[in-house]
Length: 102
Image (cartoon, rainbow, N blue to C red; front, side, top):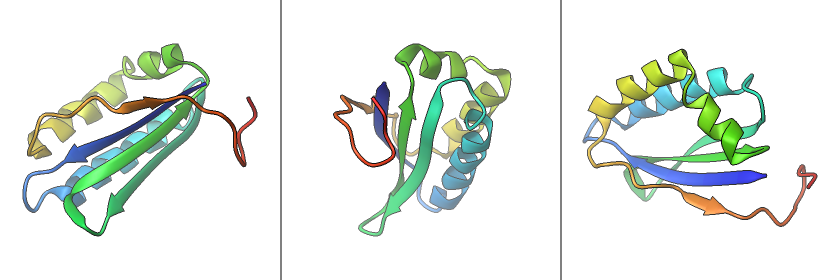
């Protein structure tokens, strides 16, 4: 399986709109082949950032989802809301846990 955890930083005053775009993205990828989890969160101590945690059957499934036209459109709508260049998310090896069958 493939786990990706990333942080996106919004321009001042845009974090709510950025979160909304990512929540919309979660609706599209929830039906994508191989998507097991796509969670959006925030940290009360980091007011301009939104965090995304994804679990996919394979990295290829994740990469294929990025090529879906509706997902590309959502990505394009998020870019003007960003206050910093997105940093590549952490790729984390899944060892196991509740809700995960390896």
